[in-house]
Length: 257
Image: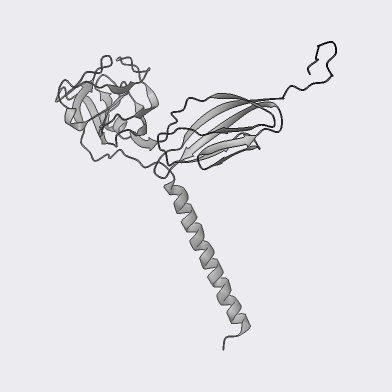
């Protein structure tokens, strides 16, 4: 029969081991919450271009123009970033349309991309793929710049993200009345959280609360989903006091506070 002392040691060892295991699981879950990188550096580039105006594209063109390709999902938002030299142009299309003379109808050109020789530097954008679009094109390099294509290519990142489609940036509410907001997001099953006031909370996709004092509150609504970068929307909520009577009617006149 084990002594009470030995039994206590066994329980202590088990407790420490269990705590370590739980801690490892929690760290793994937290890491998985980050967006999943979509860009595969092993994929070959396309020699081609996207015009800075008109978005006319071509492949099999000059070898001094580089297009990186990324397999994507349709109707999905992505954060695209890289340290650009002289080019930063991104677009999506159906892969079957990738041929000389293609046109991009869904695209982003950095305002810093002047088709010249000035270095753009660190740049990013959010682009939502179109219906039926399964391919992203990133025009990231031209020999007109000074950096090597491999150096620029090594900084490319494409991560799915959550965007808000509901254009609500400001609201006015009465102190003591409940306010609620159900955002529309690119990922309908994303979870949301809200910060910015001690009277606000988020449950089942709805932000709600009852202001207990007047003032302006910057409410940050954050949407999260495993494998996606978080999306954030900020709403300025103006909480105002309700008008109250401070006197009784006299000759048909009422004074308001």
